[in-house]
Amino acid sequence: MKKHWLLAGMLLLSSFCMAQKKPNIVFILADDLGLGDLGCYGQEKIKTPNIDRLAARGMRFTSFYCGTSVCAPSRSSLMTGQHTGHTYIRGNKEIQPEGQEPLADSVQTLAQLLKEAGYTTGAFGKWGLGMVGTSGAPDRKGFDKFFGYNCQRQSHRYYPTHLWNNDQEVKLDGNDLAHKVTYAPELIQQQALAFIDENKNKPFFLFIPTVLPHAELAGPNDRFYKMYESAFEEKPHKGQDYGPNASVGGYQSVEKPRATFAGMVSRMDAHVGEVMQRLEKYGLLENTIVIFSSDNGPHREGGADPAFFNSSAGLRGIKRDLYEGGVRTSFIVQWKGTVKPGSTSAFVGAFWDVMPTLTQVAQAPEARYTDGISFLPTLLGKGKQKQHDYLYWEFHEDGGRQAVRAGKWKAVRQKLKADPNGPIELYDLSKDPKETHNVAAENPAVVKQMAQRMREAHVESPIFPLVSKK
Image 1 (cartoon, rainbow, N blue to C red):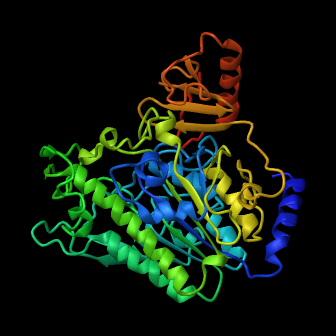
Image 2: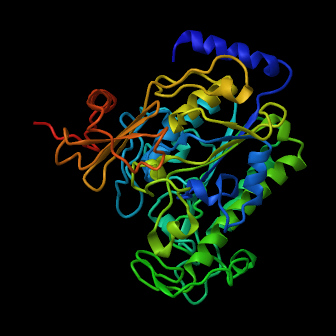
């Protein structure tokens, strides 16, 4: 980041940082929640009053993007401030018997920078960036406290055999199909609330990467499920990958998948409400920036039905696609007394912008490297907001994909591993936000420029190779 942008940002901060202590930071990250799954983004069938209230009291972004269209690399982008052409983790690479490819010792995270700035840090939910004891474990990447699923594969189960409390295994009663007791999201939520209780008198960074509403589709037969039990016409469905009664590797009937999914979203919304109530209880709302987002587009696993719920908000694509429905995400910021209530922003940003923004808010050390820019001027409504020349994504499964957004243009390349110079689809988002009409043939100069940006944005990784060398 250029020094003059840092100086301008510090001048912006001076108006409020002189009179108050460093603001707390709460970042809530949903799992596989589509842009259209929230009422404030157009959802009509599922109730999300708490998140809608967050938007009404803060700023709702309409052109914000996740790191990529699948879990681990998207979260790596968020934590490292780098897009998927640079970030260390670029795919869901599994390690047996538990865990994923870990972030390297050399990788700097947002949590580490905030910790250096005097923040107490906690993460509650799903990690997936390095198993306990590895270089990528949460306690080695800046978190004082971690509670939840370390392995994202384990997080497919809402009644798991165990969770992790830092480096200590917490054994549960999961996979006992006849006597399920511990619904992991509720247990994790209580730990997140306790973190606020314990750290209310000092600056804290609370990261809540909830597993809701990721597949499997499962939950107690309580008020959240009952809200929707009779609301939708449904047929019994065989889960594609997971079911609410599935043992590991098993396939069981999902009796009412739509009601189950809707109940899971409403449960997640209620958890957001509980966090806000706890902050309000301690008088922390005016000194806490609260951010809500999702890691990628909506999923179809386990009987989830994104078409029925319009989970992609009318956009093309779902999870694993680099079309808008796979990568454009909800992004809401509430900061009482600082961010204008009920405001919206068309700023075109992405997960890699979060690190430079929050380190600026926290007056933390500058990242050694970031692809992001601070959007603090947008939040404050003051100063000149720098803009991206372009945004870049890559996806390493299904033959490999790349995508670029530059202004109104969106370019997508499929089957990259078979042909790194294969055809590029081009869409004019200003006229065609649903990406239905490929205008590459009419705009060869734009296609050529987008191809060049794809080449320059991608740095080949020996761990996650994408472009074959010839």
